[in-house]
Each structure stands twice: as C-alpha cells, then as structure tokens.
Image 1: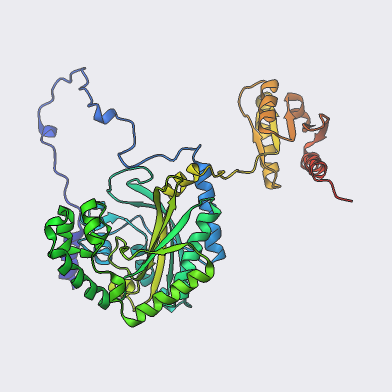
Image 2 (image 1 turned 135 degrees about the vertical axis):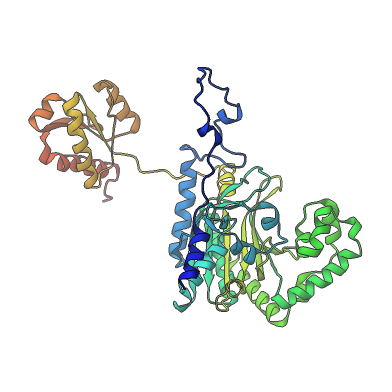
Length: 473
C-alpha cells in the first residue's frame, strides 16, 4: 500500500522547473536600451470571437436574464451552475467524436497537473454529470434544472455568433411523456414572446430511438455512397463518422442531394412514431407555430426522438436561429448513471439580444432614484455617506455626486435624473446634525434633524405619488 502511495505521489508531483542557463552566467553590464515590444503584445483588444458586453448594452441583457429567471421560476425549474471547465472525456463521451464540436470547435488543453480538460461547448453534458455525481436520481421526478452562462466554441465568428457565447439552458430529467416535450416548447415560446420577438416558428422532427436511428443511418449512407462524388469534402468525411450531419450541410450541392434522401421519420419505431404524433397534437392544442422539418437532426450525437429549433424571420424572409434542443433519453446511462429519460433546450442569448434590437424592443429600465443627495465641504461629504446608507436601508433609492461640483452643478444633476427630493448637506448642517430637504416638485424646502430625515423624505414621496395617481371618486 505504501508503495502505491509513493508511486501516486511521484505521479502527481509537479514537474521541476527547468533552470535558465543565464542565471549561472557571469554578470553582464545591462544596457539602458529597452528591447522593442512587438505590436501584437501591445494590441489592447479582445480576442477574435470574444467581446465585451458594455454598460449601454446591459439593459437588453438584463431584460433577457430577468425573463429567463422568471420563466424558470414559473415552470418550476431550479437553478444549477456547473463549472466552465470540465474533463475533456465528458464531452467526447456525450457528444462523440465525428461531430464538428469535438473535431473542430472545442477548446481543449492540458493542465499543469496533466489533466485533459475543455471549456464547456454546451450545458447538458455538465448538468448530466452533476445529476449523476450528486445522486439526483433519488429526487422526486421530474427534476427541472435551469442554467445560464457562457459556452465556448471555436467557430467562425459572424453576426450574432461568437466563440464565447451566452446561453440560457433548461433540462428536465426523469419523464418520457411527450407532454413534457410540448411543455418545453411552450416554455421556449413564452420566453421569446415575452422578449418582444415576432415571426417565431418552431421546426420539429423525430429521429427515433437509438435502434431506429441506426437503421436510418444505414439507409442514408447507402443513398449518399451511391452519389458520393456530388458531396462536399466535409460531407464525404462525415459518411464514416456522423452521416446524419450531411443533412445539415449549408453547401448548395449537398442540400440539393439530401433533399431527396431517405427521411428519419419513415424509419421510426412504433413507440417513437406514437410519441411524435402525441407531441404534434399537444402543439396544435397550444397553438404553437411549428413546421415538420424532416432534415432536422441537430449537431449533438446524444439526441433521440424529439429534436427542434427556434427560428425568427425578418421582413425580407431571412431566418435566424435562436436556439434548439430535444430529447436525450440515453445520455445519463451513456455517462454511467441509471437509464433516465430527459429533454432540454438552449437559447442563444447573443442572437436574442440582436433580434431584440432589430425588432426595436424596449430594453429593461432600472428603477430611477427618487432622491438626490447634494453636499458641500469635506465634513458634509463624510456625513453624506451615512445619510446615503440610512435612505438605502429604508428602501429609498438615492443618487449622489460625491465630487467637487458646486451646489448649482449638483442640483442640475438632480434635475437631469428627475429626482423628486434633494437632500442638501452643507458645513453648517453637518455640524448641527441637520439637513435641508427640498421638494423638487413643489419647490418648497425645510430643515430637519437627521433623526427625522427619512420620515420627511417618505412624506414628500408619498405626497407626490398621491398627486400623480389621485383617487377616483
């Protein structure tokens, strides 16, 4: 046993740092000339495909975040946050080699300890790992989990698509009833509608069980092999790794060829066919706009039965993908857990924000401060900090300008903010323990003690509300 521990310690021990030969060299006279730094090292900009979300964009993002969180709460989802970095084999095992994500797009690297890890390219694998690791299978079913955050894919950057992209993610574990498939689409539809997006359509398909999918893939390969010379180079390679991905190719020659290819819906087993029929009946009942897209397969290898995507279109008819998902009944078992049916979907928040702007949707408007604190002098400035805290504790949102501006300049700021009350604190008031409370609506003001300040402010604010919303007789 001791020998095993010793071997393990040797394996985990950090590699010795290689000493630089110049440390042993004789001292040399240092030149005062600083070597020129390359232009690349001075390039102060984000990496290609990465970006900053600046303060003026945040109101749109805040509206999206609030809508997702509210929808999650209303539909009974609990928040779960999984690590941005996971072991690489988690994604290889769940998504599979032969997919573009694993072969071309994943950000993987080796840690100093020798672990092969990756930045998450999607949420479901990490959430499924957490489900197994923390024994969630014993919880009452269905288990509904919600996540939100960045995912990473080394894809070609384009409008609305980045290498660091943000997603809202919803997962349901433990039930295979098609009514949950319909509810997931209903939830997605509710979110995009609440965010003001119009011309929404769902594309749905069923790729069947694992067994029927294999039968379909064989028929598809036979069809494509007979006309292999008409495929692009990528699709020729996919024939041996992931043939169903040829259906999603954007090359014209491939799209024309696969338009006449066998359809997955014709190879469904009886149970999958009945499941899909029930889903469509639920969607009709909910009046969710959808169309059946027999070429829809999605890019992740773990999907079974239901797959869907959410699309928005502009006035010219151009369509934009907002997200998608489907059922993955075999994922938990594939990762080593018990057989557990599951369904989920993700929304691309970057694209949604872009669509909100295109549709001229109003962004989130934060509550405006109704009180402004103006101060003059160092002592007044110190007292104002306490004053600001007292108002905040009583639920009164206040603004301030703790700079060196004159009283006139500070009152201009108060007017610009539309403050209803301005609390003025000068040197005299700071010494006396008082403050001037000015009603910016009526123009009246009074001097009150600090103990009575909050009550005086509340009285004015309550009076202004009453004037703005008079009771109907």
